[in-house]
Image 1 (cartoon, helix red, strand yellow):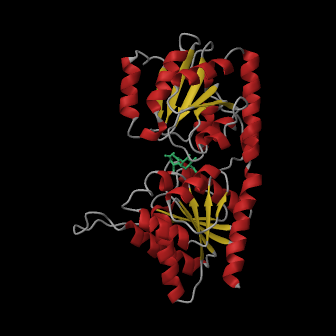
Image 2 (cartoon, rainbow, N blue to C red):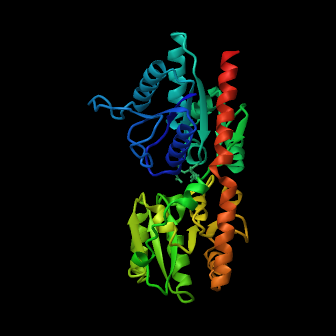
Length: 377
Ligand code: GMT
């Protein structure tokens, strides 16, 4: 099948999932065309069956805001025409699903039919999409898609609660290539990150408000009297500066390392003993799954779709949002002794294997086949 994937090329979860999906589909023999404004960060250059089409924009003084949707729709039309695309798969509703709908209408005028699948990722529904400025267009483009998927049950429910949707939304969870994680040569950087007698605790996010990065620092601060440890903070975003300021206020500057955005998260995770994700909103929590796939137990909030990923008392523990006390106590249960930690590490890996891409990718392929066969009827 010829599939166009429209996504954000950045470190955010939706772009990562879209990229990993495209790579997995290409390995299975599909032709995959990424359409976005930059090379997706997780897309390495050499891949059979993968093409990348950049959406270019030009500044024009009349525009206060550049019309990205127009350039994106035009690029989709061009790629569909040239490569006989069967399916446009839009990841993150705004503005991708809307731009895909416009491309579809333009192509219909030329007698070309293409199916649109929209995958909802989280903030496109719970935060940004729900804003009154966007809601009408987001509702329209979800309803106008040929198929809609969401990355968790929780997000599916939120979508029905917040928008007037009369389409069936199929839940297809995020995934991980467990075999690749198991078999890839381990390049753990433990000695670079901590002293031999220290545990390594990790957090990865885009440092937006919903991630509650100050909670991460507070949890670590309250753990320190009980356990020798280093905290590794991976990622970048608006809250990084004041989270760093909190680290200084608490006198933790020698115990907390801010790595910024990184492509080497597996190298950090494979040295880690615990992962912290105290988010106030999270449709799935891909970072937690990536940690579990490296055998790292997770201390998280119980927000949104996290309970569908992190299993209470097995792969880690969940607590109410902001309950730092409970998160510290739960962390101490996992870190109690070496035997307990090893058990939780093995269980985290076991839980992650439920999300192996070999189980999940066929679910997307099935949706593609359904919409394409419907189109031919
Ligand atoms: O977490 C973010 O803010 C980034 C965001 C995105 O769209 O890139 O992530 C969302 O999609 C991920 C992949 O499906 C999910 O794992 C994240 O839970 C979700 N984030 C939120 O719902 C806040």
